[in-house]
Length: 116
Image (cartoon, rainbow, N blue to C red):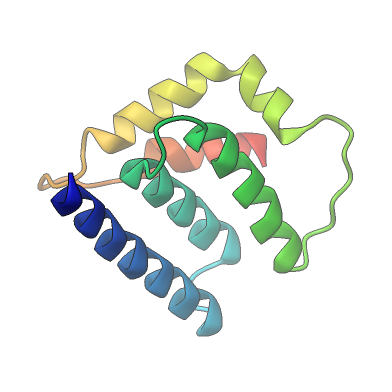
């Protein structure tokens, strides 16, 4: 169990470091960086429960910190809840490609941009 915790901590540090660096240097559009941050968070799955809900809170937090305006007509959580099947399909399609020759988050990006 300790080995898993250490590996998760290293992955989390690497992922947070990449995100900070990409934002600081404007390496990509901010929405692409946020989308990548979220799918990496979900890949690491650091908590036993609540990772999906926390990922949506983190999405809102990052959008606000990067200057995006927040106008709550419908909550992000509610939008995802109504499209839960699409959410899991997009997430699964992207995650299935991880550590393969055709690694892509395109299915996740398509969903992410529909709900943000």
